[in-house]
Image (cartoon, rainbow, N blue to C red; front, top):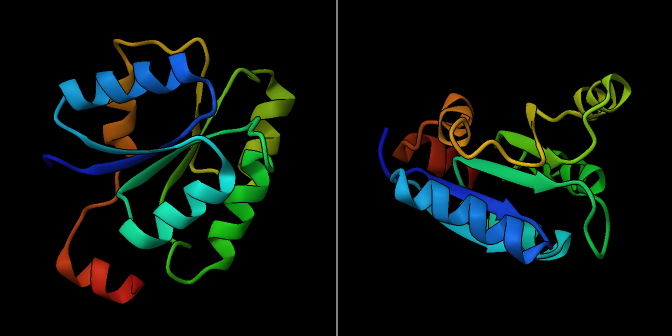
Length: 133
């Protein structure tokens, strides 16, 4: 797997740049959005291999963004990881029940991030891309 496209939906500039820089250094391609609506539009247009979704966004939260992605046939199968400072057991349960495939806690462990992302990326194949269109 090389060059997988990862969509990062994060409204904090520092976190966004950190995640983007780390992933690009490890060979991933990235798209970025700073609000849920832009993230949804980019996900639908580009069908990334993975979405990293912040929970606290300025327009609607990451749980609502995920609900909208899952309701759209074009984006319903894209893996989505919660990117969050909420790391209590109840939060983890809430994210799993909401349908997130996993989560990455903040502050971000820069050494582990690329391996965590690699675990969840969806293989990019022409057949998968066409079936989601």
